[in-house]
Figure 1 (cartoon, rainbow, N blue to C red):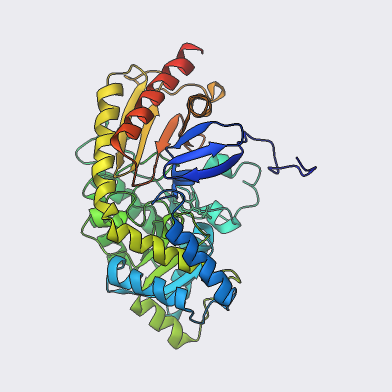
Figure 2: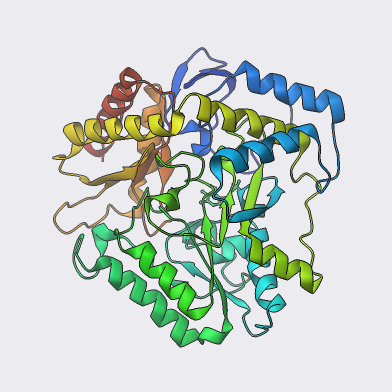
Length: 437
Ligand SMILES: Cc1ncc(COP(=O)(O)O)c(C=O)c1O
């Protein structure tokens, strides 16, 4: 081992020498099922030769080319995006090297657009109370994620914030029939109190990812929010970094509802973990207005990296050829059913939820009152550690306030036997951790 201190601050560490399909192989000889797809990234699984070959070819043929220029790999990615993934109205594409940069770029594009159409006072973007959008000052600030802002609270810019729908814990009552309208009204109230003429955009995840633990909003929430954004001239930016490219059983998470966002942000699954890549997809009108005003979308040096675009083109084609979005929906339902059979009556499991292969369970001290375990009990960290020791990697979720969440986001190629193993390991890990408190 070198003298480097890695990671920067001490944390649980594994040494993975090889990965194939849904399996990780450690240096010490352990085989682990990757129930988290890394950080909910590895949508087609590990070790696809075809993707590696495409990356190698791009690297050999034209290692680096400035982002605005075309290369065969960029052209191939744009072709599959437009032919199979993006709705026709999202014509403008900007690529970065990940989710954070893409959210930052999307927020700037929304701000630029409002300036370009003469809405100079529109300088604010509303975020939500349970959310994660990235690591930079602005994306961390707009995130509803206290634990990731700790120590920075006094330095971060302030963004207006509205409650994230959380049907289990809705103030009207758990899974109340008016919850969708209730949460949409909170957005309207925030817009009115901030001053509608000052709001440029609203940034949210269509299905809340690991910060909330695969929280699906009430059915009427997104159509209501879309109407509110239209009424007030607000750009609707949907962060699909985790939910995009098939993860929730539809090409994009927002497609579970009859809505059209103005800007879609992606990352993670875009290149399936084979290379770092993020994407921002915007309405034609937004790009056209910025163009007319003479504004720029400055590139990141490594945005749209040729090798990353080559990976994305292959990964997105593989998902189409192998019908993996449909498979994510079916295997996700199987996972939900098995989790329900095994854990629905567990005295400490409050909810099993999600969509497609983005699933989570929420653990509580008391199922009736939904009271959580104290922070110091570190429930999810202990369950993740237990799961790893038993050969399954789960993804711990939550924001600090929201906690004791275990997320699952395996590759879409996972089979039913492997899902059964994930469920039995989770059940055993929960019992071991709670019995040991
Ligand atoms: C919903 C969401 N947005 C943004 C990000 C940040 O993306 P990245 O880590 O690629 O910068 C993440 C990462 O987990 C995410 O889940």
